[in-house]
Image (cartoon, rainbow, N blue to C red):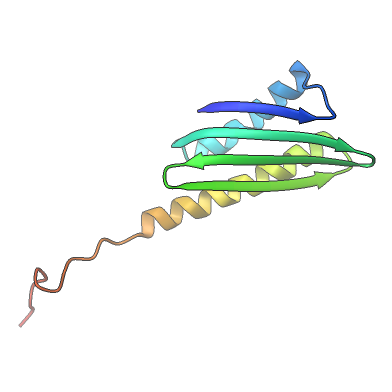
Length: 108
């Protein structure tokens, strides 16, 4: 998985980079088929926003979270992304492949 972290009106420090990296690793614990992840952190007066876009096979997931603290916004963001990945994974596992009616066995 490639992880890209960018900041708007914010310089990404090594501490922030490490925090985001460790938190997004939690998502990989549930689903390891993430192709690419982009995290956007931004600061506005009294509002810190974190956004994530995860590219999965066949789908892109996008989440956004805001809080007064940047680290709290990152925590909220990872919680939302984790729930979305689990939802995507369960839908993919519950997908049943149907056979055409001609190939189904007839039970007499």
